[in-house]
Length: 125
Ligand SMILES: [Zn+2]
Image 1: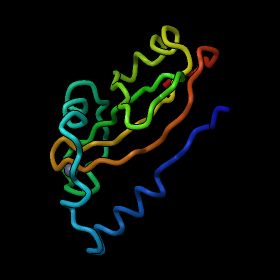
Image 2: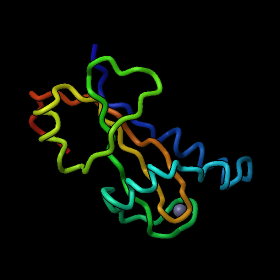
Image 3: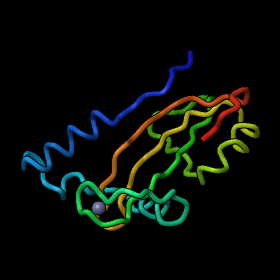
Image 4: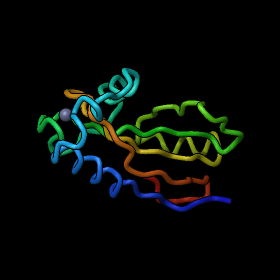
């Protein structure tokens, strides 16, 4: 069974609220894995808005894909350039797609959305 698009912006806002009110420290939430930061630098999509934590303009959106077949727990997805999604879904079949926000300056990161993509979907992106 395939779920629709899941939006994580509410959870993201809650985390940011905790940081601005001092409930959580920035160090607590700015702990992106080096691989994620690297993916952000190399293949992430630039974002117009400044970072919600450090205000710098190092924020990137990174796209991760998991194939529909037997995704084991703990198995990490593959980061891909967003504009290759259409090619990937054609080659690999059903994909579970995750968009992650990462700041290459302070290493803030948060999941933004996840959705399933099938080769039948026309609009990709
Ligand atoms: Zn930042």
